[in-house]
View 1 (spheres, rainbow, N blue to C red):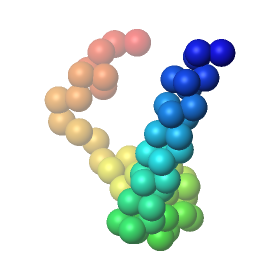
View 2: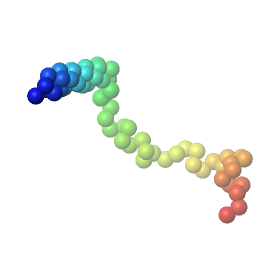
View 3: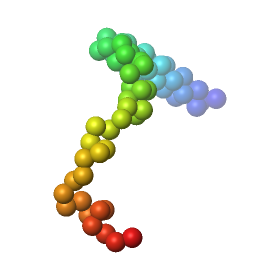
View 4: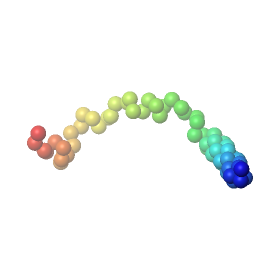
Amino acid sequence: MNILLALIPVSILLVVGAGIAFFWAVDHDQFDDMDTPALLPMLDDPDAGVERAGDPSRDAAP
């Protein structure tokens, strides 16, 4: 029963901390663009066709 005296204030502090973190993120525009980060991995790499001189992976024999 005594553990409740410790767990209740700790849980209240965690909820307050999560609320502060959420409102900080909203205030600093962290949720403005939710679509572009998900699409970035699907974009083509512009350097994919360019051969790099001295690339060790190309110099090794298979």
